[in-house]
Length: 172
Image 1 (cartoon, rainbow, N blue to C red):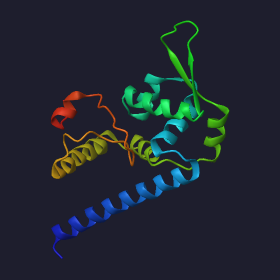
Image 2: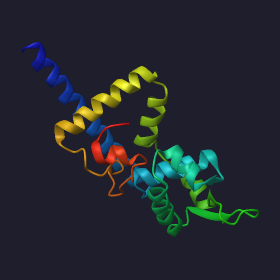
Image 3: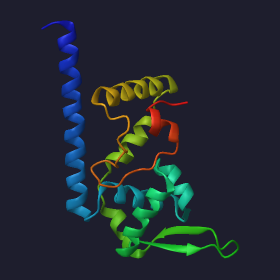
């Protein structure tokens, strides 16, 4: 096997591993909690930062606020979170877990998105830049530059913060 063939084989095997762990983690989360990975990640993030404003929660989840509001709406329907208006500034809404949400967090498994973010935070800027370039190249290989980014194993679409990325697939 040539050096190039070996590298291609390694890359494909690593893709398989990533998809496998994402799939297994997602099934485990749904089986144990009845929630999607993004919903559980949101609950865990609220638990760590409660009470939290939607905009701050969106930043911690690396999601657009509109995407987070949709997730919050679904979690609120399940009585896992509640919204509280600020007493001084009625425009500000705080998100907190309900007792049911707090109980769920105690026994919930890890979430793939949380593990990914935690791992990426530990990596140097130089390595992050290399990963970013490589990921953009992979997106280009697949011709997916204009594909809206869905949350991992979810139908939820994240509205990009930087519209230049959405249009061109490149960072400014």
